[in-house]
Image 1: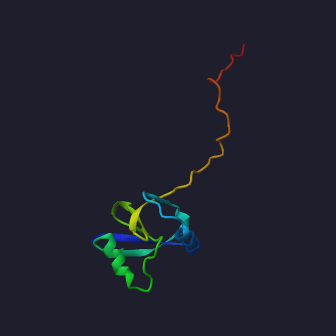
Image 2: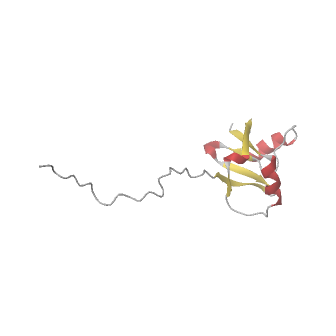
Image 3: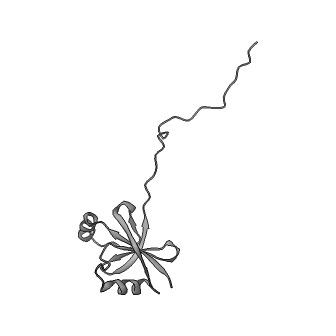
Length: 110
């Protein structure tokens, strides 16, 4: 039986998410806006939702289930839709350094 990892959206982000207009297509989400909170064993995505529905901590709009193959699905008002983590670009500090011009020239000493 597949195991789904549960990612809960932080409350500050949830308020923004709820008031944002619905968009279709893949939702880009930031890992910093989520807290991982265990797993649930279920045959399908919607059966995982149903298992959690009547618990003390059901899935709510904005929460994510990560299923087999690390496939992310975010819960929206209309159901689950595809999501992907947005990984911030790491800056090395060398972005503004000009590239070296040509090969190094070594002068022979006489």
